[in-house]
Structure formats: C-alpha cells, structure tokens
Image 1 (cartoon, rainbow, N blue to C red):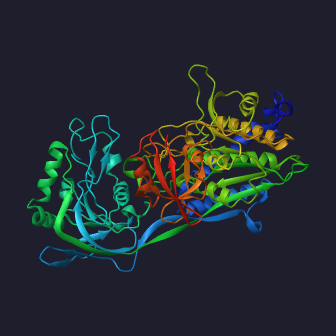
Image 2 (image 1 turned 180 degrees about the horizontal axis):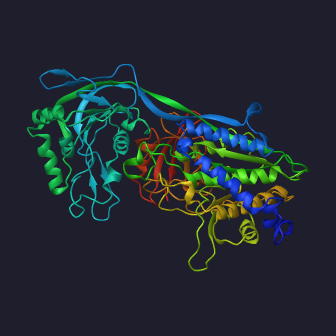
Image 3 (image 1 turned 135 degrees about the horizontal axis):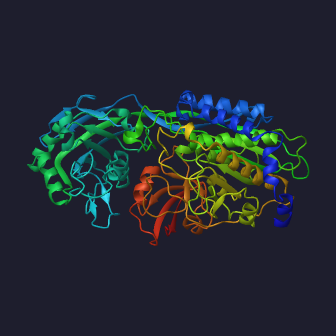
Length: 610
C-alpha cells in the first residue's frame, strides 16, 4: 500500500467536502433522524430475529438502498441473502419418565404434573442409575475458595440429580456462598457442565427456596432458546425425589441441602438402587433470517475489487437472552437505537452519498446490513462462508456498531471515538489520524472483537470498526432514539465515508497485517481463550471452528477453520455451552489436548490457551 498516494487523495478538508456534497447538514440530520426513529420504533419490535419487526426493518433498509441508487446485491437480483438460525425447541413425540426402585418397584410419572422436559434437552432414550451432584456447579474463579460438586466423582453413564440455584441462595451478601451467584445458577450452564462430565441425563429439582412457590415446574420453553445437549433433561417434583433420598440415603432432601449450606462442602454421592428410564423428543426450530445487500459497481482498473461497508440491524427484540434488564426484560421492546440502529442509519447515509456520485471511479462498494449479530455474528459469518462477492478480491471492511452516543472527553473537550482494526493494514493508523474530522481518537490495532468486522478479519481482510462507547442503556429497553447524538453520528458517517473513499480509490490495495491483541470477551465467557470463532449455524455434535484468530493459540497449534472440536482434555464437547463449561476449568499457559475431526478423520492437537 502506498500511504503517500492515499494521503494525497485525502488532503486536508476532503472529509467535510465529501460529507456535505450538495446536501445541507440540517437535511442530512433530518433524514438520519427519520431512519433511526423508524428502526428503533415500537413498530420494529426491537428487531429481534424472531419478530415481524425484524423483517419490517429489513424491507425498509432495502427500500432505502434502492432509493439511494444501489442495485440488489443478493443472489438472483434480490436485496436479501437468506440464511437460517438455530432457534428454540418444540416438544413433540414421546416424552416419558419412569422411576425404578431397589425393590423392583416402578412409578410412571405424568408429564406436566410430576415432571417436565426442559427445552435444552436432546432427543434420547436412556435408562441409568441416579447420582446426586448437589447444585451441579463448579466455582474455581473465586479467590476465597473453590466449590466443586463434581470433585472426586465419576458420573459417566449416570443420570445426575441437581438442585436449582446455588448454596445459600437467599442469604445476605455477607453470608452468601460466593459472589456472582447468578452467574453460577444458570440451568443451561449446569446442564452443559453435566454433559461434559459424560452424564447420561440430567434431573433438575427445586431447591428449598422454591417451596413457597408450591414446588412449581418450569415451562418447557424456559430453556428452549439455550444451546441444546444430546442427553435428556427434565425437571422432577421435589416430593418425588425426596422419597428417593429417604430410601437410598436415609436422609431427606431438606437435610442434605442444609448440610451443604452449613459448611459449603459438597454432598455428591450415588443414590443406590434407584434409576430412571426417560425418553425425550425435542425438535429444534430454525428461524429464517436475511442480510440486506446493496451494491454500487466500480469503474476503472480495480472495478472488480470490493470494499464492504456493514452494520448489523438486528437487536434483542422483546428481551430475554442478552438483556441487561432485570428479569431479562421479557415482553419489553428493546429498541436498540444505539445498538445498532445507529450503525444501520449511518451506512444508509453513506450509501446515499456514494449513490449520488455520477460516474464514480474506483472499487465496487457493497453495503450490507447484517442480521443475527446479537446471536454470535451469524449474518457476517454466513456472508464470509458464502460470499456474494469474492473475499479474495475484498480489500477492506468498514463496520459501524453503536455509533450513536458520541460524548465529550472531559480533558480535551473533544468528542470521543474508538476505532478498532487500526493495525490490520500497513499505515492504516496514520491514515485514520490524517483524515480524522476532529475526534479524540482511541485507536485499537486488533481486528478481533464482538462485532461483524471480526468475521472479515479472520479471512485476512483489513477492517475498521467505529464505536462511540458503552452506556447504561446498553441492551436495555431504554436504548431509545431520543437519546441519540445525531450530529455526532453524522460526524462518524463522514469519517466512514472518508476511509471508504480511500480504500475505494487508492490504486494499490491495502496490505493486510495480522494485528495481534486481546478481543473483548463475549458476555458470560470465563476462562482462557483458544483464539477461535465458533460457528453457531451448524447443528453438529461438537463445536465447529468458524474462524481462527491469526497468531492466536489455536492458529499456532494448527487448528483450522472447518475443524470440529469434539473433546477438550478428554471431556466431550457437544456445543458452545459445553465448550465454555470446559474452558472455564482451564488455566492460561497450561497446555490442553483437543480432539478434533477434520474431513472425517479424528486428530489430537495440543493447544496452550491464553
């Protein structure tokens, strides 16, 4: 890349000239306001992938692309690139549970009355002995002590019985078992942990704190959106299991629970003579999703090369998973004005500006509004797996995610802006500083991170990610359009247009650099990292590697995109939840052996997590 030519093309004042064109600032602000207020409206229902509002937003984006003069960039002349997301589950077929005792007695339980299959359950038929694992948790990240219900146990081939919540669930902060109790109480995490221990099934029982609620059973849908396991999972009434404890241990469930609470020592043990025969049938439901793609063809010698300008338009819909609102904010519209109606509005604005240029010379511009980002960068990962325009000829990707809350730096009194990816091309950091329209910049060299640019960086494509910062409304219903800094958002759109112009016009394509750095961990992630991006689209038994961080631990050990991780340290990996459960037990700097499948052949690879 010839930096001098780039800088010559983008002399002082070019940014403002490009941004303004023939449109007054107030007109630009007004149309951006119209876009963001619609995308973050009640009508769009928080743009959750399962809502009608998400499709309404997609249609709106396509129309704006068309009005801006773009052409459909999808297959067969369409605006959309469809794909499917693994959704929630539905109970169907045979679902039975029978309790078998030491005297050959057998009790068939009634679904909905005595037991309920959980939405995280796999479809399976199992008969196995019972083993009590306390609360079914492992706490090794607290500095005060370690609590491990699986210590010195072998539950392989057993159906484990576990209590809900954690020890001392209702205790005061002073008497609590350990900090961050909510983090360890998640049933999806408990089930995943049991699966990694090779349990044959999981039985969940209400702990004592649920007795005032009459020992109610959870609905099947309670865990229907969690990553499923292959084994059967069900909740059984406390009074039913209490009879097993009295028979097998000559001790009530209440008594053994009090022993755990008293000294915080696990009471995990077999339940001699008792077994369960269980059959479950849970069907996973696919959710249709779509990226919105518009294109402006290039002209000149580099017309067949591409610059991608992207932003995700999905958000959390009506709450639940990912929400920071108390109780998950279920049923409340999570408007997602900043996250990420702001980025979507910005690429619409940039598209309008380029679309108005007559006989524009330079590389092809592909504008993409991605869906499924909140569920794991699914839309951008799908595009990079099945690109509509060759990734080999894609010279750069500009990503805008949460650019609507520009604020002032208290020291410099300048508006602040963070840009990730400044080290992913030679001289890119200097270019970004040169064309800066007046922000107090924080440049981050790494190309990895929890937004859609990550998918492109892992394909060795230079990236730039504009980000105005987190705030208290993040992932809450209160992230509304009236709180957006419109002038600050426009200023970022100006900046995005300038870097896009540089990459589109410069004769020599940017030279990719494998910029190292620590990516921001995803919510809830614990333990060291292998440096991979999971592929959430695949329904395989294992964790499919969708991308490998350049120069990361996995990359250095020879792990490749497309590998299927089926074991870590001899423990089975069935999905993202079991992967995270096992990685939570690992230590940075200590090698661990991965069992992977590559082209149908099983291999062993030693990786040192960081």
